[in-house]
Structures are given as structure tokens and as C-alpha cells.
Length: 129
Image 1 (cartoon, rainbow, N blue to C red):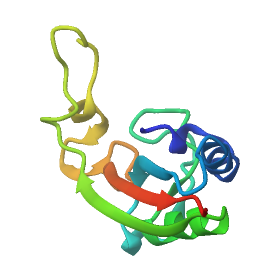
Image 2: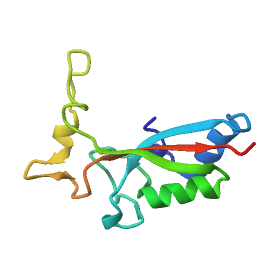
Image 3: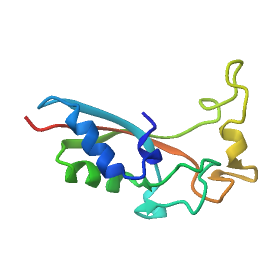
Image 4: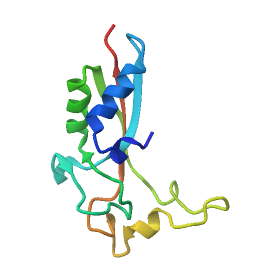
């Protein structure tokens, strides 16, 4: 959950996940993606939503291709939703900056760096039998 975009080699990470499954096993992968209108893959110049460790943000079609290329079957996106400031917010136990601090104050559809705001996809795929 929420790790793939922090990996320098997302394909290797997907392969690692596949090795953890039994034949016929099901992968549930939650990660950030970009809208298809913003291209195939976003490679942030320095930071994404103030995070330095974001390497690749694919669109859903490209992420599906990565999963298929790694040998998964029945690849599907079961949820695609904008990350909200109600969901990712400061709380009593997490009092530092949160999503609202990382979005453009004049255009919440963009990060402070000008990239598309976080869009979350949940993908399901199966390891072949």
C-alpha cells in the first residue's frame, strides 16, 4: 500500500511482490497514479507533493501494462479516487504537515510543484496457476 512510487525500480518491486504469492494468488496494489491526460508516466524533477522519494507515477493504463509485463493475469483497476484532505490530514497523533500543505493553495488540483494532485488507484491482479 502506497509504496510503489517510492521505489527506484517499480518493475523489480512488482516482481518481488509476485514472488511472494502462491500460484493463483491475488495481488492488491494501492499506489499513486496520474490522470491519462497528463501522459504515460510522471518522473518528478525533484519533489512530488514535497516528497523527495517519489520516482515514477504511471497512469492506470501504464501500471496495468507493468503488471501484465511482469506476468500477472486478470489485471484490473477496482478503484480510482482523488486523495482528499479529509483522508490525509493532521491528527492528534500526526501533527506535522499533511496533504493540504502540499497542494497549490490557488489550485488544489495541483501539487505545490505544479504536478497533478495525488490520485490513488487500487489494482488487483492474479499470479498464474
